[in-house]
Image (cartoon, rainbow, N blue to C red; front, side, top):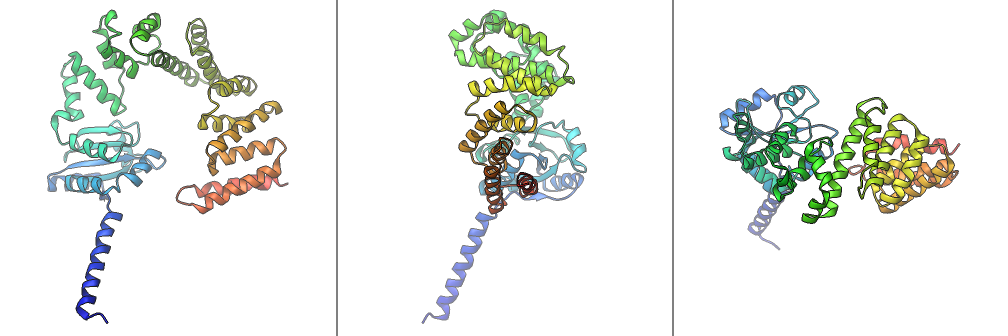
Length: 403
């Protein structure tokens, strides 16, 4: 029989173990739940900067950061000791004004603000724990703060190395880059555009299909290819033209005035990815015009030749066919895309549902009902992973297919 002393020691150890484990399991950044004015007052009283997670309720990367990074014990220890932490939805209440005040247009935006509300440093997008801690450390060093670099630019600093730093900073926080990029490129001689530094600038930032620098890239693609790789040069040309075409397609209500001249320009090019580019942009063009007959005609070869293993594209285009295409031959093709997507990634809300939908319109309603029921069971079995709100719509589909 154990003594009372031994029992007390066992209980004490057990309590310490629970406390220790609890600190690991429940470690997280402690966010303030008060007004921005109150948060600034607390920062002033504690002589700390403010870290603000500027998020929205629909943002996937925001949710990932909340679940995986803000709950990391090393992250939590650093941020709780160093900052007054705020987590504010940019689409609710005073968050709307904060988004305007700090020019926030991408989520999550990670802001570092002083007690007076002056923005000192910022970043955008999700990041790993170690990178997030490094970001917090950089925000403490004036020389590394975004506000310091921006102030130098506004005060007229324009040397090449500084401009490269500033361009990278702007890209990192998803702020407009066109004006300083134009300023920098204007200082570069044409023959220097293909050097390593300028190729990095062009590859990472240039997005104007009608700029003289892009024209130089097109006319001297062999020079760039000999120095770097054909794939990187072709990828850049594809990206710039694709963005230009899609801007023209979506900037007007199915107006072809901007897109068709660009299309003709591309058709005249000697470019390795020309067919892929034209098919992808034509597909977007016809979809925008709701011309689903021609949409199907260009989507089919585009998917079969270039995107046959792209889960997202297979799923999205297959479902678009289900919703809008009437041709039975095309719907049979879409069923095969949906099946391939399902085989690559059997996700109940997306690939399984899409595949079931295509089965239903291809006179395979029993198979469709069976698959949709399986999808619903998977969603119900893991409410943390899957959206339960998808179930009623899926049940309605089953009822319709069972008639």
